[in-house]
Image (cartoon, rainbow, N blue to C red; front, side, top):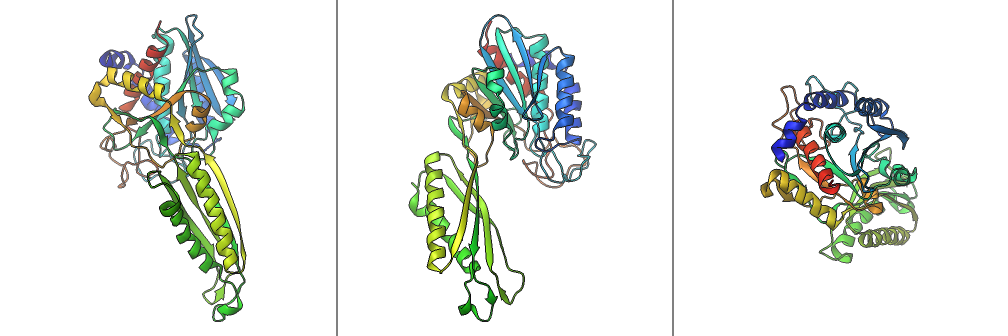
Length: 397
């Protein structure tokens, strides 16, 4: 089946490779993917596929219906780029300073489009395939907004899946796991109100930097002394801002950072303890602090039956050696919002070791969110074949 599908897809791969590289050269940030979405719309309409636009500003959904069954499936590809400068120099390098497809969303779009071509023109299935091209995965919460704007009411789906390339996994291999596969993403901001004065007379003021240092260390005790040692959690203070002169004790110190967990229970515990420590430690030093905690993306939790289907489909395509268990990561993914509403799974396809990059690539590693990254175009056919095989398995005639 593997070779059969690859051969059937062969005719569309060159144009999809060019399509992918065009997207890479013209990256667009969250909710600004106007050119990207229009290119997707034009391509889908060229193949006679029903198109729905304007969901979450730039979101696009292609719909392919065959047969008479009411069964339906959603396949998602994210579209947005990152606000970073590319260091590669090959022909399809980003044309926009400070913007780059450093996470492979250009490749995700190409894989789903290649699958759309085959599903629309050659595949035989009984039901509806919804091709979800989602904006604003990189921090914008595009999935949540699509849901809020009625995605599942307008276009019903029994289940939904997403595939993400993963550098370091051998090219084309599939990696997936049951339960949590990616963590929740949350951020905090703490403003400590000190009492400024001369640095040579600290007894006349209240040093907010000293309090900040106490908090940074105290937060780590939550992980080592409050949570269950078998639960995974991360608290990272990533910025501390205070002061303007070396001989002046500042009035205010601000701390910001991120918290990652796989469960809501641990997240509740961490937020509560951080708030308590902030209040009590600042009070102990004779002042107060403002504590703000924002929950961005929930953990991405796969459904057991959906994971079983992915493993089965991938094994049928590549054999058991082409499927591996993915070790959950503390990274975050807004596909989590879809999985809160519908059964499904999020899984990885190996992007290889970076040897696919052409002459002119940067000197850094081919890792996600790295300025030397580039998507492996050999995955377009393999990823499309996986999408097609999943549809065939779920919407059997």
